[in-house]
Image 1: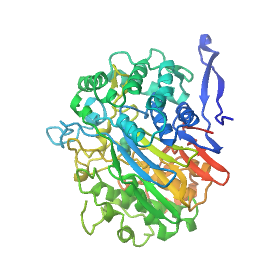
Image 2 (image 1 turned 135 degrees about the vertical axis):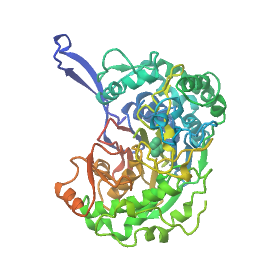
Image 3 (image 1 turned 45 degrees about the vertical axis):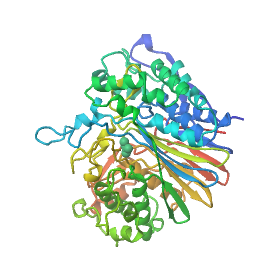
Image 4 (image 1 turned 60 degrees about the vertical axis):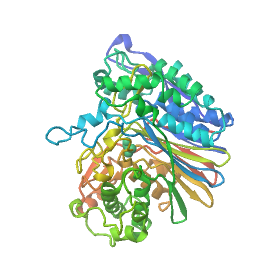
Length: 566
Ligand code: GLY
């Protein structure tokens, strides 16, 4: 029996206005976790999870289901799901083959190192965050086509069918999505003077139907003609028109020339677990491996889960790892990223040869000295199938609704991924991350990412599929989720739900989820010299675990994320 549970709840809004006092609306409530026998999907939106499941049920494999989920998220999770952005896929086939697919955006050919600086050499933040100049050349459609060409089983067009239906017929939005659409209405109107499906006269409410007929038409073209329907012809023309209308420099040649690239994943052992994760142009895989290795000699498991001692240890490691990120990481096709040196055990241990008793000030930490110099909106989904294939994908248009520029003739938002480059050495981007030469802007270069799609293997098969959105917090979110499940022996649901914290070297602050940590733990961290800031939710982990009882699909309880499986 199909194990997805569709629940529709009737909600009555009580407002001050008598006319509206009993408006009946229907909202889809996501299933947050489920144990299944064969396979399933965990992602940011329940309709997209169901889209992926429908492909598994039709005989598709995990890659087919991932492709269907990606296109469905582009419809049902416009905040971060996309065809106007990019991302990374890490996969492990049932027979142990591992692969990493890079469909990260690229800088347009007319991009230049100082394109976001004013005449005085100061960064004009808004240019890399809003409008046409903020967009990199999108990679998502090329990425899905490349993954399908190498690993897919079902016909390409079939994988887009659920997304087309969702776009054409619409779906009822959640309270959370309604809130987002209302919040960004002024931005949408600023960059898109014409009508777009995300703007209406009245406020959005939970249960309102969101229909995207322009996007349905674009998806239908991609279904019929493949990736070229996006990168050439009317859709490419529409992208360039929207980008140029809002001050951008992307050309049809940039789009026609885009290629997704297969990369060699970062792999390594942590205790009995083999970690398979994303190499550059993401910083995520290298940083994750450094973090796991750096904390291990101090045995975080003996310190206690969420203890001040464990948080202190992890934050000290995070400072050193993010300092390295700022110096050494970028697109390895353009800059000699010292991957092997950064992952060298002796080097990693030299970064923290003893655990300081008190917080080390960020100013007294810098990038490490390598022996030689070689070469907040994103969304993650995890998929496994009955054959034992596992896929982890993190995909992004960077900020919520990307650059806010809507491609009016093709129905989707463009990314603002150019903000992930270092616009000027030492000047923070929207996530407070700083960078230097390694991540300077250059034509055709991929901007450095923190996305960390990861598969953890144990006893020769996949054991955990994990990843998260969250800009700079992605790496520390994945790091904590892995530690929760391994050294702290939390159940899958607990590992995902546990309160999270984050340090990224600069600012010199531990950010902790408000209400998630005992007051005495916060006091103890302050007493050690840490600057503490409590904030809202960090990350959104949509993960899958192999357990003794079956496959446990777990969606992050913080947001609308949901699972579907069989
Ligand atoms: N856009 C966020 C990241 O790639 O890290």
